[in-house]
Figure 1 (cartoon, rainbow, N blue to C red):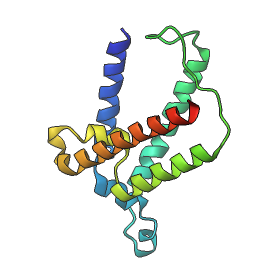
Figure 2: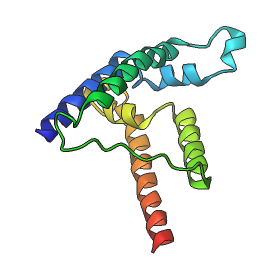
Figure 3: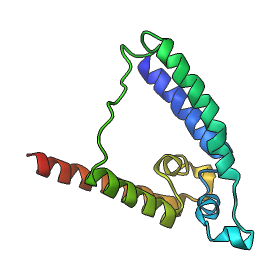
Figure 4: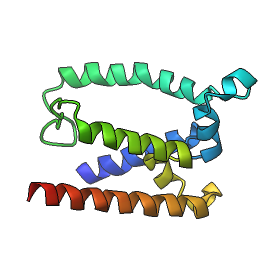
Length: 146
């Protein structure tokens, strides 16, 4: 049952990203180009996507707090808060810079690998770089703890 729930959630997530055009790097770059506000070329439509997600997440949070356990898992896996440290700030900066330069976020990048996206060439390079970054991160994390 957990794998079925994961597949359904993944399909819904990918469909939502596609409908919101978050798989389109040009759309992302037009949203992130804050300098374009003065020129009238800024695209605020993704802001509406984020704002629209807030009530849904609030509702999900309220429902989750009232449930004893999830429907498709033995327990909720809620991460504990951790302090803001150098690793978190550096990782966030690298993520943000990569997102801004490429105009692609990891979730939408996976969705954009679909042959119908029309962007598969540029996205493959991004996904390969993302996988390389994940492997490098695991290497450095393992070597710093070992």
